[in-house]
Image (cartoon, rainbow, N blue to C red; front, side, top):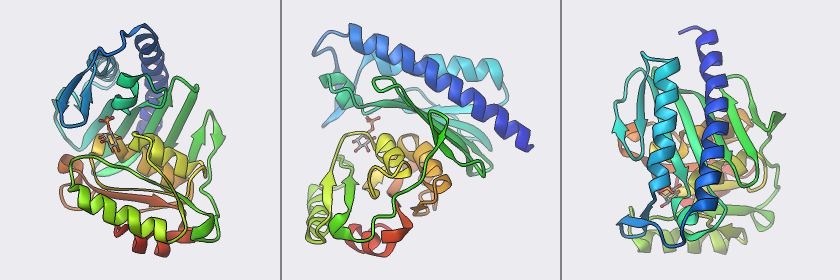
Length: 260
Ligand code: LIP
């Protein structure tokens, strides 16, 4: 596909993220507290997830009928031109009334992440990137941090029940012992976007799904950061460990997290 094809999809992904963000905000502000289900242990689901995903799938079908879509809620089909979407990343936050969540949209062409966008409607932030075109926050360039040492660093360590708790605690202990500050905010997508914007120095998780992280991986790389080879093996369909970080601390963060 031509660069123009990627450019067209990038611009569409920006528009879809904004439109989906507006819908998310309306649904968030009109939701009834407690109106959520659990798909599994600590795995939240709200009606809004489905509504937002439906909107994005519709827009992609209208504009790019030959592309396929794979969404967290509705599934779909992987192909050489596929959109991978998480309608609400940070669903637990959305469900519990914590305004830290986003829509995450990635376009993958012949196995490479070509464009990615996220919108957090509660802060009005549109994070975006296209391959070779840089990463932006509301149109302004993003750059990863240059934090010189781990004692000055802040890392976000994502958590889910998809890996044993003992493994998470062991990773947490190793990172704390380096003197780094730690956080866990419940949205892997925003966690990676924050690395791209230099707000934190790394995001690691022992297992994450492609719809949570593909847009963020592109943003970190386009903002001058380093990421592990998340798409190795069957990462696109089954997920993998993830690490995105500033190159300034890559060796120390790989050693502490065990992801690399
Ligand atoms: C979330 C991820 C996060 C992970 C959570 C959950 P969701 O995605 O972004 O990294 O730790 O368990 O998977 O479920 O909010 O779309």
